[in-house]
Length: 368
Image (cartoon, rainbow, N blue to C red; front, top):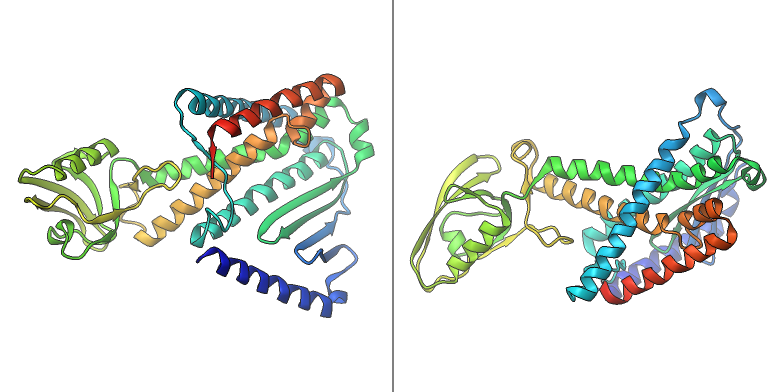
């Protein structure tokens, strides 16, 4: 879908939402919940919370959130340093600004929005939950949609928050980042279980090309080349051999959905120098991957591709939220935490310093 078509569709959807809202406004409000449409492009669902803080016996351990925040901040600083080093010393722009509709489209846009919704809602929910666990009342919780971007918010009792002990205030502020870190770790575990770098999945085969004549078909998974695991380096070597003018023979260990494992012989004769396939690659790391042998016979190719893309986006979006919110940047959770720990004056100084470092990292390493 091209950008103009995407913009037209979004415009029509919001036009319909505005018409429906204007006609049925009175049905969208109850005593404890409400749905509102502001500025024509901001949809807000808000629920008033009438519960009370949890009793002391049911409160979560305070230091878990603080420890997870410390890990998140370390990862964020490490990422910043890596970006600056790559940009200045290697001349590599390794970071990408993700812009829905511009460099995220099609199915990936849906997965991105799903991942953003999960990360943002969990982030705010953990703020609310930890606030209650710390004895601080929560007034309301809500979710929102700005054009296509999901959002969430929590409203706590600010007076009670200000009167709470410092470690409780820090715990509440750290909880959102802690939630994103847990999601990042869980998504890494899932991706590690369902994928392997010792293989590559074929998503398309050019008819009458070398691969097609050798028997390779879409969704075949190649695990070995001449008895060697089909790693990224082995794939590179295979491509080099294909570019040569020699006659070569390769034996591929292939898994084909519905048929199982088989060996296919690929005979390369000049002037053939292209395999004639499209491989499934991680769009972010630009490396080829395949289903783990543990699951390749349990899920079909489409299910694997969908799962991998969903959890890849969940990882990327939550890692991005983790970085931005853990860094002390005035308006972020990290910014407020440093003010709580160091005081207003020193906290602002740290915020300013990190903001300058972030700007340098963006200038030397970010691309669209």
